[in-house]
Image 1 (spheres, one colour):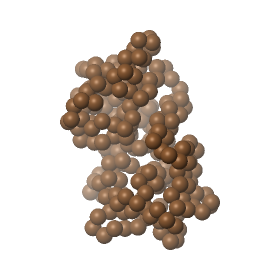
Image 2 (cartoon, rainbow, N blue to C red):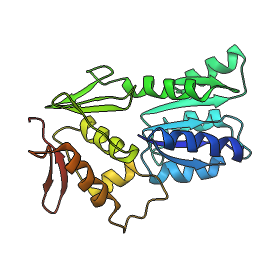
Image 3 (cartoon, one colour):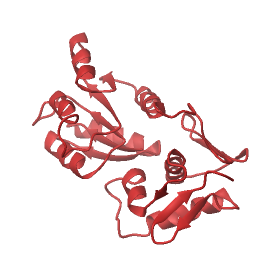
Image 4 (cartoon, rainbow, N blue to C red):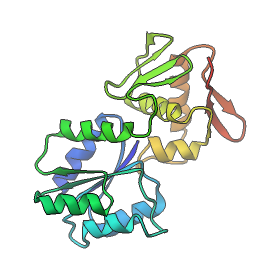
Length: 223
């Protein structure tokens, strides 16, 4: 998933982003409401972690606007991270459009557990993803082909997971950069091709991910 962390506390934002990247999530950071809006105008995020107490904006108002402002890409999921712990605040956040509400201070393990739970919503297979001979468990970051474990780097794992969430769909390099890499990725480098080449070698023959000339890449739905 591509995640946007909106948090004005630079130290906390850095810790959250570092932890999420270590968990194989492509993560961007915004410190203000204005920065968050700029990110949301240019990028379709899978999930946003939003602090309500921003220095230049009301986070709750931003949550509401995500459902009405056509210029902002609405993320698939949104979780509020805030020090506001009153029941009325939680109700307001969820009613405004948030999918979950986590009160500070929190354990990072709880945040990642909630992110995994949000990511599983809408996936018919439940926890495990299965496409042909491939299987992947987001809760343990394990993957297999024909029952044989695959030893993948975090980036390779994220790339495989994105393909498995879109079986049979032709994905362009731009699609992969937007959802598997973060804002620090250079779109003019060969990073996608290099990581994809390594992943294909580890997946073995016949290759489940094929190249569609001049278009992109596709995960076959049959072995």
